[in-house]
Length: 220
Image (cartoon, rainbow, N blue to C red; front, side, top):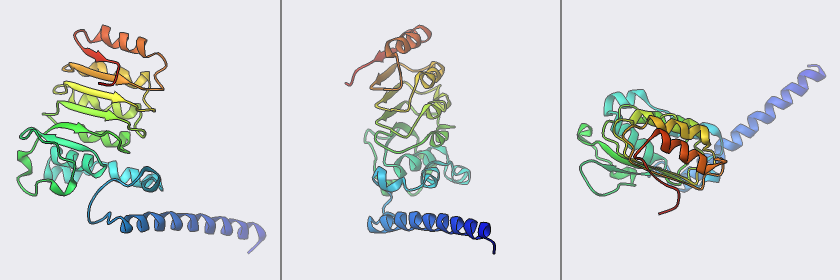
């Protein structure tokens, strides 16, 4: 093997070692935290060892949607990432994956989703498709979601009445433009969006296109 071949081989070996280390670190953390027995969100710096983990936690499983229904699949996505939900049939929130119903999935419809403090990415918001009872979404402190996540909100345009987007550092004015398609929206909470350069202008623009919408610009 010539010098060039040896150099390429050495680089390939170093990459393989790095991947192996990353995978081993992730599974060590997972086992130590009983991750596989009880689904829950790992701390941000641990779970995000490699981007593939985020994709796995957020990608829509079309077969699961077919078998369990879109509401159940979306609920699993939210809880798998450390969020909370509320069904239409109860006033209580659910934040424990292991407390999801085990039968009669078709009787449980999502009314509220709270993704505050989770590591969801835009890809995951494809789970909103075919949700016909969702009235409220809370996105507070979601540091990993950008404008692409908001682009999926029109999936629930016919039912969503309350939306909060706060302390989401990747959201820009461009993302907020998607909100004008939410024709049933009555209350919108917006604050601490550092990439929205002119919040007053963005709010004014939304107000013009969505008369009657109550826009709250402070924590409440």
